[in-house]
Amino acid sequence: DCLLSRGLGDVYKRQIPRFGRLASGIAFSLSLLAGSLAAPHVAHAEGQIRIAEQFGIVYLLLNVVRDQGLIEKHGKAEGLDIKVDWRQLSGGSAVNDALLSGAIDIAGAGIGPLLTVWDRTHGRQNVKGVASLGNFPYYLLSNNPKVKTIADFTDKDRIAVPAVGVSVQSRFLQYAAAKQWGDKQFNRLDKYTVALPHPDATASLKAGGTELTGHFSNPPFQNQALENPDVHVVLDTYKLLGPNSPTVLYATEKFRNDNPKTYKAFVAALAEAADFAQKDKGAAADTYIRVTGAKISRDELLKIIDNEQFQFTVTPTNTYPLADFLHRVGAIKNKPASWQDYFFEDPAIGQGS
Image (cartoon, rainbow, N blue to C red):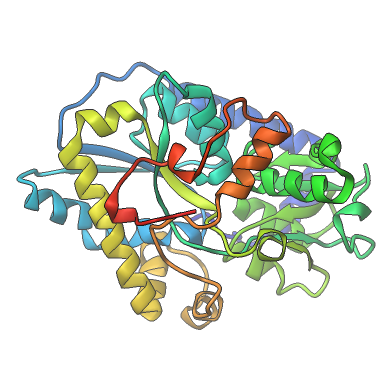
């Protein structure tokens, strides 16, 4: 977990007089990464699974699954010795590229990237959601004292998101813009956004001194950024939409059909991890720190997750309003009738919304 490495803020000040060049460089690097993952992969048999996660507490269930060997445990119950390959990427675009190229089997990203790839593969690869990773509030932050609401951002500001236009943070920003100015201007703030991984964006926002004055973040990065008194919350997604599942896991229909035992073991492992994390957030915090190596104290982490707003559950919650919005503004062509259109049916994930 490349969290807030010492002196990173100073490096940003010395090397990035114009933030646009930074965004371009990172976008290019991510393109190379996606390209490297796009090499043809031979379909594998039951008993192997490759999982892509990103940064933050929202992926804690995967940390528990990994730490406790739960996929392997449930695989043995199915008569399989499952080999698990863990990968870390940044941004929904890179994750979707990896999934469609066959480089990964399970994608971890926001509900925004899921809806995008569901729409684009509808009737073909048929990518759908596997499960939620829980319900968490995401904050849009700024270190610009003039920015009190999204209406205060100008062309002098830059807002970091994991993937421009596709990430769930970008989609939340578009949803907020549509509420502010109407559906026809839903993408009004897109021109101010730049792609940057959460750890790097947090470091830059805290340090100041660059064009990056905003960051649509997630926990624990948003909480760490708020340690700087110059950083404040501009938008809270729970106030925007209510409690919701911003981050999910998804896969292709082919992987699910070709690997039913492996898929079943994965979902069972995830459900066990959710039960563990929800019942014992102290143990969950210990797991996160141990697996990721995050530079955060146990007490600080518990302050973040040990509250009623954080719910570790595999059941998708309140995802449909964003899906309906994206179809309404033309961001996705296919209109889902309900959340069940873009999630695989599975009793283990319960009745979502």
